[in-house]
Length: 627
Image 1 (cartoon, rainbow, N blue to C red):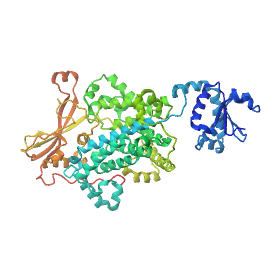
Image 2: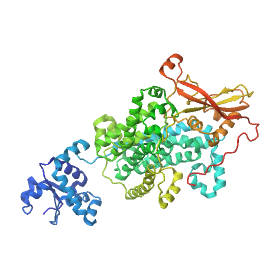
Image 3: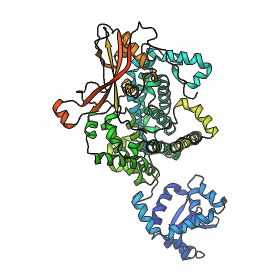
């Protein structure tokens, strides 16, 4: 009598051998496998026809199972509870349905084997993602470093003591208004002080810890601290740190905590296996980013998206185009229309490949990375595209890395996984947080289809409580395409009649200046100027304070600009003028050398001075997220 369960299969069936190879990896030495061609004589009570039509499982006590039930019991023998076996045994009609599906597949196993070979490769060996996780963490660490470094060179001009919107003033106002609730509504370490030194210190600490993450040192505590530091900056940065990629970095950083192994030394920290739930959550995040971006384009009702003409405007009207965008804008109309259709395919169809077999995942990875590369060369979107590429890395398993990576890189990217399992406490924490994330993010995703959909009250309560932490977010870029490009030119004067323009580092100004590449650096003032030009300055609480700092000659704010046209003393008056910009055509650029043509539209803000009573009205304090 066998001391272990024995699974008997058809050794002449390639489809069967592929699945047996997979199950052997999962069950290890807990189950014995044998083809019926070798052992059928030992079991005369089982007919040959039964062996040929399905697998047979013999338990040590002599009990015999076959078909779907045998498969489900094998999965349970892999060391984890199988919900399929529970449904088979307890759900009404579960056994009948399972056995019908098993017989349907078994009768067509040659055809199914061909399709599986196409979609999954030559074998069904369970995929592992040790190297993908290592490179994901390295790229995430690089993005953290770039985010802290980029913000570090701007932060004093944006929210420093002499910046546009001082962080300390904001926290004082929130604390006075909300009392003890303020600590939850605005979770930040800067409640203990938001001086220039402390702001720079947090940016410097973030850069240092990012290098630790890149090296793989103490990933779990490092990721937790990085998330807390960046959350602290985002919540006091307000208008200047409310971009989708800031929220995406926080959400990815939080999910990475669930993926991080224990340990300090890099050579040992990566030996624990990655739980399936910790791997699926980043895929769900990537799905939401791409799919929601496609859905909002359709549900917004914007005629340029529905008419496939959006890219005839996008390259010209996006916030910070590159020089490549000029060339793309001048593509033939049929090419731009085809690119919109391709965009819809990538954003609406490809995301479903993320949950498919390995070859579909690999195709999705390649398509999405190429898509992000196209965005990188035509527009400056900070570190958003690098974050999306980092998520794509988790779609390819170790077999791909072993096949395409140089031996030296593979050898040093991660050690061979050890036998230790993830601690039970962390495993249950991951499952609990996954349930919470799915409970909140699924209604958010559904609302991209139906904006009037009502979120259940318990979910609304949870969402209000967690929203200040910005770690479960809604995504969707360019739901409505901007078809014209207004630009603000800020001007100073000492006489009120002759005006001199301030030039910005990155946004369009002089029509002859070539659009520049700036990503992954994120010039936050230049980006906000794009948003401000789309509406009234009265809806931009930072704009008049910005002008006031120019009147005061704040060195921190002036450092955000390309040059100061008033080096000796600040001007007496400041105003803003609105222009409309358009890309030039090839003939015009050859003749004039200009990348842009512009025409004046109107005065954006009237001339103001420090001496004017009420020239800079007090902006209404916006309620923090969650209020």
